[in-house]
Structure formats: C-alpha cells, structure tokens
Length: 101
Image 1 (cartoon, rainbow, N blue to C red):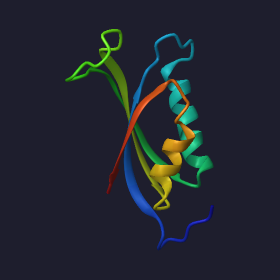
Image 2: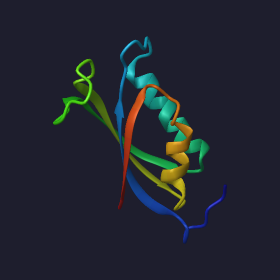
Image 3: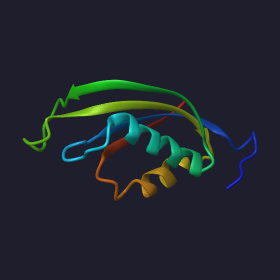
C-alpha cells in the first residue's frame, strides 16, 4: 500500500491493552503494535504509555482496568479500518480509538 503526501492523514490512536495471562512485557506488545502500523504503511511518531487506568464503567469484574498506550501515526485514510482488522483477533488489544488530527 503506497500513499502519496496528499493521501496521508495524521491520527492519534489510543489502544487499551489486556495483559491478563500474557507473559510478554508491555513494551513487547507495544513494539508488536508499532510493527503492525508499519506493516500497513504508516509512519509511527511518538508512542506514550499512559499507564494502567481504571475504567469508568466496568463491564467485566475480572477486568476493571487496562493499560492505555497512545500512538501518533500518519497513514492512509483506510488505516483505522485496516489496523482494527489486523488486531481483531489479538487478545492483548482490548480496544482501539482513532482520532483524526
């Protein structure tokens, strides 16, 4: 997937990680997500680990908090849909929110 400068958009992606039962360090999961972005042709800028935060509305009593990670990325207009499809079956990614910048 190649994008021209005209087709490139800036996004802020916030991922909520669910690391229950995972032996990988959070940094390894973040690196894997960065590689996923790069595999989709996106440029990954600043990555910020916002730490573990409690959910406002707890849906699952066994999962009351998650690790929030913010990615500043630039990519095609189809990047949010393509990224969600790539991580759809990844149990370590609970949710992903994309904001256009």
